[in-house]
Length: 217
Image (tube, rainbow, N blue to C red; front, side, top):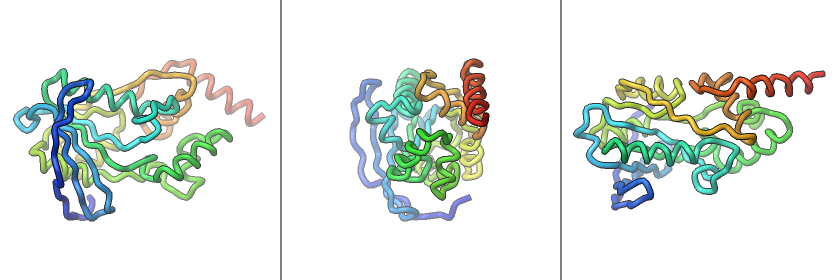
């Protein structure tokens, strides 16, 4: 469990989106001097088990629609699902590149072009495979009056981390994007090396195994 830090809701505003009208809250805290966001639809504090997505920032996917990952699709799908459900919270954490920052994330892209997977690239740059922290996310949910949630995720580590921070994850709701030629190996790495619960086409796994075998030959 992370050390308690000062957390302050700095400003809130109405945010109309393509998925519906949200309220956006900006939070400041002294753990890492980063500002984080919460997008709230409806009144999730009045719902017994509201939908929640804890989404780590991905500039390339969320803003530019990169096909190297599934982040942008997950973000947009989560917002649409919350609007359809009538209530929900998306906590947007400023943890680019699984916590390694934008510069090293782009450097990791180059290492991936040389044959490394995302885990190998992060490790080669001196980082953990996943350096994210969910303590601030848990405190944001507490500030919003949300503690029993249905979590939109494929990542069991995220469920465990939030649970350790006092958030009751009563259900996991899958959030899987489309597989394409650019993100197939990225998703396979998530499934095989990071325990993500993904339903991937068998031919993608077979193709990746063949590529590795050919590279070792």
